[in-house]
Image (cartoon, rainbow, N blue to C red; front, side, top):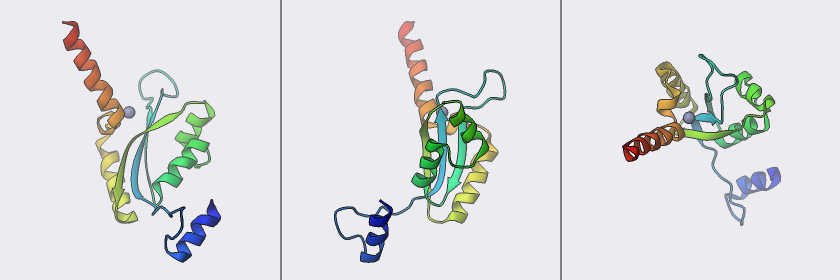
Length: 128
Ligand SMILES: [Zn+2]
């Protein structure tokens, strides 16, 4: 895998295993449940990376080094990708991460939570 990526880089994306261009930006992980019940426990993790897929893969394996995702992993709690924001540069990713974190409202940013919320509202209307 690593070899084919390197060789493709040299040959300029020739061959059947085309090298994917790393996507830089921010990502939001949506975990199936919080680490513990009660106030102050989140089930989201917001981060930034030069290579989003590589970074998210590390979270999935529990080798990212980031404390919260490692704790989720240790407890066997899996995640889905709640959202990705692709930026042109790492600096933009950094600034975007700061903006997003400042909002302190991950469920509002998370497409999985937003979809679930819409479904709940729809169900409530149908039950009336
Ligand atoms: Zn979510």
